[in-house]
Length: 234
Image (tube, rainbow, N blue to C red):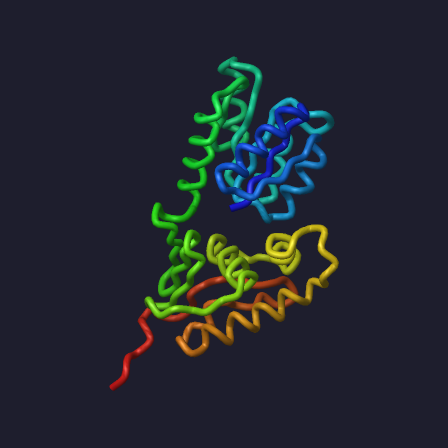
């Protein structure tokens, strides 16, 4: 899973990013509120860790803006203040949890895990499920009704991102940035190619329709037919 940390203290930001990576997450960092908001608006992160006091746009302004735009990404606020008013204001603005600096590494990691579990992270055995579809993030395996899907690395990452954001419209830019990265020179049309690959592999299982095209926007993973397993041999 991918986490964005927004913190103006460069040493603390590096520490947070290192902790997240040691916990097994992909992690990016930003040192200003404006940069943090821009990255958060790309819709490619599973969790945001945001300091309240930032140069330019504050952490609370980031939360307000994202929530006003309809973004539901879980958000952990970091604050050097311990006043009840600040904490209440942050939660009322739309943050999901808070942590007061300085904090213990173990507590920070535990808060991150708890927020990700609450917002659809994998089960303890690594499974992420949606109706007939199961992806295992530990073994990097996929299956429909228990029947294996042979996926490449990029196909797995693309399907996993769709699965974790099921029943939500994802733009081509969001899918491209999450799976291929922000700095790659590959064109966005690679998303359409890999969606075709995924549908071709899902079709023998009678489940290619679960990836829906949203015209002129992108794609969405959504069950639009009764969730009955593929019939067995007569």
